[in-house]
Image (cartoon, one colour):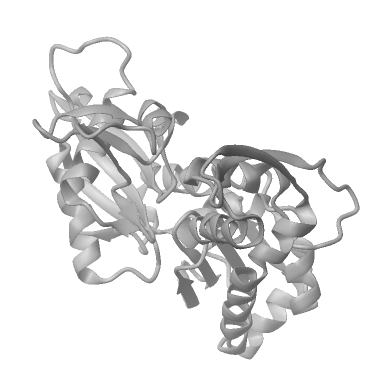
Length: 341
């Protein structure tokens, strides 16, 4: 331990397309939407996270809201750096005299390219990191839900986030086979916007579509415990006047069907390429679902019907990845799958 080791803080970041979570001292201290609001004239960041989300799609000409990540990777380098920097500041409620340096473990999709990895390293370093490790999302999710990734035992993890769906078969500290597709929560939101426009001649925004997904989103047109119909406010495309309609979960299930079929196809493709001995293990252990998409009503049942395998939804699917990232941060030397620069 060096003289200034107390100035190095260890943080684990799940840098997600929809939400960013940060673990510091074994606690989730930041859980905010991945969005920043900036002034166009000065380029100054005026809000991050929940505050910026409240401004989203409600801004005037001088303010723009930016989602720095698209499909799980950094799409706007400057906005991503500003977002990481501002979210790290949220860890400390009080002002600090000395700004610490950081050792970070950051989560990335398994289908990421070398250029996209470099963007994550650069953003972290610009935000004050001295030491950066990257971990693939399915591996972090497996650690987060308590799977012993070092065992010679096959486990299948499906992490449905905002931008990507990560499907991986894990054994002996490594990913044996994986599929990473850019069909996930954001795609579901777009499906709902398109459906409302086509079926009801109604224009709704991203935030309203997100609320519909949370309140009446479903993967199956018939559920044992159906949610109540949900009131949706938007603009009538025929008259231009705001109006309200009621939508049911059955209607939303039909609108999401096409995207869910893509996820099912990717799961079957991953199972097809799995070595036979690991496939035998998966038959016993089943499939584990994590990420925000795992909360979609009936999705576990639908995947189970398609694959004829048991499907388990993680206890806290939204935080499984960040918890696993936090475990990897404690002892990076123990996990050979961590990627350093």
